[in-house]
Image (cartoon, rainbow, N blue to C red; front, side, top):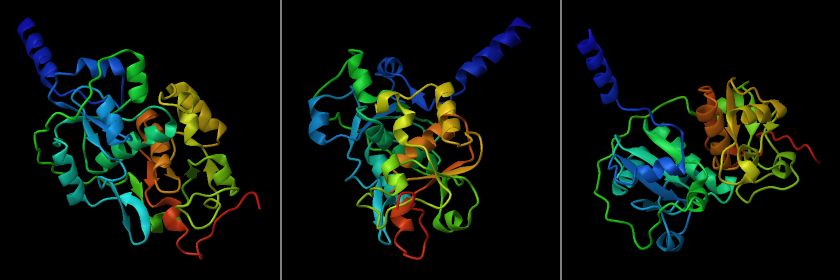
Amino acid sequence: MRFLGFLVALLLLSLPLKAQPLVTADWLASQAKNEEVRIVDVGRTSAEYLTAHIPGSAFTDYKKDGWRIERGAVPDVMNTVPALETLLGRLGVSAEKHVVFAAPGQSAYDMAAATRLYWTLKMLGHEKVSVLDGGLAGYAQMKLPLESGPARPAKQAVYTARSVFGLDAMLPEVSESKLPLVDARPSDEFLGINKSDKVLRPGTLAGAVNLPLVWMTVDGKGAFRKQAELKSLFAYAKVQSDAPMIVFCNTGHTASLVWFVAHELLGNDQARLYDGSLAEWTLSPERPLMKIVK
């Protein structure tokens, strides 16, 4: 009987541990020699990366490396699967690796670079992916090891995606959907007072409610709020955290952070991200917008 218990314990230990959506700086530092963990520095310039970065981390340029492209006059939508497979392989990422995205951590906006790439990998069917809570700012604040100079040569990997459905929402679905719509932009853009250069008209989708991404992190910086506090903020914004929803913004960047909170931190597998967001929606003057402040 003891032998059977020993075998069961051994089997459980041999099973791969499920990656947590958020990892701490301490945990990440402890994985420095783990070849199965691939840290990807995102949201900074190459000059900033060369100055200081987490040991062994790869660098990717969020804006230039091809994570997001213009398609049919819609800016910053997810690139094609073959292009993303090539990009990930170049970074030394295989489908089996545990990928941790490390953003600067200076603001909720730069943390959204990490959550956007997190969503992208989930769309590719990647199982082990995490975001560094607090970002590089939190890591450095703990006086954990950093290194400077160019990235260590990455061993080229072959990445094979397996597309996952149900994490994104497409234009026809948004047009016809009766699901709750959650606008993750700042309140001035939600109200129609100001607009981004990425959209053609001010306003928001009819019936949408506002849940700004800066509410999701402590003081609008790099550390995510605790689950109970996040649920309270969703409730205050009149968003049912465990119900179906479509989250949008201007281009699917800031919305990815609210999606990450709803889907990954609060466990709502019915939360979806509208990739094209208002940049796509406003291309047609026939699509209605709600302008709250006229």
